[in-house]
Image (cartoon, rainbow, N blue to C red; front, top):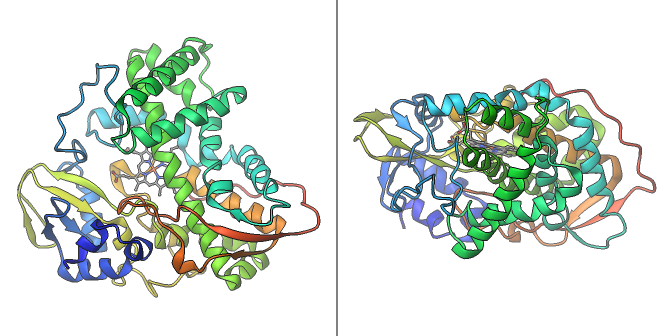
Length: 415
Ligand code: HEM
């Protein structure tokens, strides 16, 4: 069977450990794969080349190409993303509207609140005999954190979470029940409309205030504001859940790692980077060639789709010393491609890193030991060759006698 078919067939074994398939794809070099109707790019340097050349490799119409493009003025059309699938000049303009809210410094200022939320969720696990670290932790945290950063009033967070889940499911998968989707979109649009109408004209650290200011300045329509918020929810939710899930699965299956991090807390940052490198929550994404071009010496005609595999680039032993190993002393560990690279590099990377670190630190503070209750090779993975992460991590936790008081730690230095 051709290498990529094993992944596209969504076989659990390969979804869980795609590394062997990627090694075959790198060996083959750039090639056209009918399974994804795209040229597959698996080597590290080729992936970087495509991501850097944003004029030759467009982000427009790169997914769902077989569908007619949705009319953005139609209120029942899916809330398509504003950033992910656009090119300059629109992309640059739109990104600058929210960029300031996501700088490493701005995100670092959220640490005390994010830590409180993480501590609260970890504390809720106390006393439970068996937990599912996805259902009971990793799936709950990201939307609470995004609500904070957006500036959703605390009393509305439960409702917001319900919408967020529905939108992530129906819009993120480009599917679902269209009637239900329309209903959810209407409720969500109405709710956000009320928040935007109530905006007091002050631009503060919340993302919603930046979006409201852009609407007032005529840079965004109301519908675009709603699409912006939906995009942040969809892009930041499953990805972060998958990252947290992969991290806790790694920790629960590797007691020596747990002990090392407990002894040397400063290494948690490296652990977060290495877990992102090895278990990239988004394994790959598409681009569209805007001209006849070459990738890795292979001709790629104008109009071709290109499938760039961040997950494979992160496991390319030409680029990484001791590549398959999680090395807590790796130099340049943060230069992995789990957040992409170039113009479309993840805007939420600092936030995702903060969540990843804080959750591990709060677990280390409170939990004596952590073990999986199923073999690591039997953890179920989501049925997607793009999104990667376990969907359930059943575990047994032994808590320490008393929880220490949460103390803010040093602010992150890198993005
Ligand atoms: C571990 C968690 C995350 C991972 C692995 C991740 C990964 C990625 C990747 C690989 C891209 C680039 C896509 C491309 O090359 O076209 C991206 C873009 C994006 N991400 Fe993330 N992401 C994460 C968390 C977040 C969070 C928390 C947010 C927001 C709250 C977010 C918002 C976005 C947005 C809006 C884009 C589109 C940026 C653009 O096109 O300019 N992501 N993300």
